[in-house]
Image (cartoon, rainbow, N blue to C red; front, side):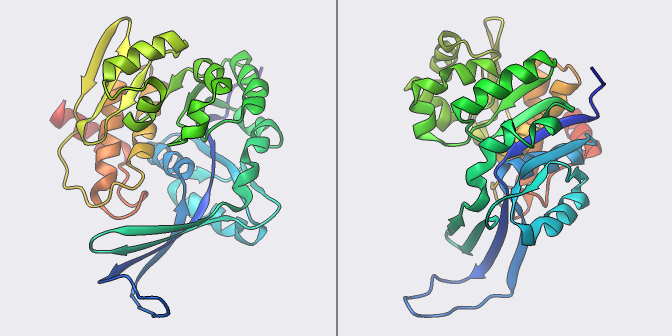
Length: 308
């Protein structure tokens, strides 16, 4: 089998994010308000994790579906972060799109799923060759069971490690048919709300106990501002994040995934994996949006040396 030409392939939903901010209030029905604060950016957890890994000098491809009119724009934006566009495919329809509108007090989102409805089929079809060209595959999506049954054994047979961050998907997590998927990947990376859905408790140790019953290898959980925890060989390891002045936590969990996977590729121990995830997650919150503040390798290392 040829040597992998990618460190990581990340697959999941991809969006065009239209971000409007600077509003002092929400408009009344029929009213228009204006702002000068607008950005257009690549969105979705898969893109955030892929860009985070590329910032850490990993060779990364993002696998996903976009609309025909947006393919060149996506490729150009991803290239700015160092992400290969090899895995982008044109779907049958419009790109997924999210509009974010922020006042000083809150944010609201309007989302069109678009071609992302078909990303599961992409994993088992045209995108599989890209997945098989990587050392590690990260699924930033709730894998359909039929797709998991086809794709995960192929990746395992090729010696490729796998991680899964399905996001907050109550129906998917509650479906017993998906339990084999949780056990088939090497690393499940839930946050505490997702862990609670799996075990019915907010206690970290209760999740770890449930994870062992479910056959989940290397159980871990992201704890937001409290950091992260993992259980390895019967021992629980907890890590607090470095202190930062958080501006926007959008995409922090996806940035955590990037730091964690980066350490995993270096065969780091469980504590170091959590530390790197906490660093990339925390530092990503320093500016608005999911991509603007993701750290590079130098900043990751210097932050690790200062705080751990």
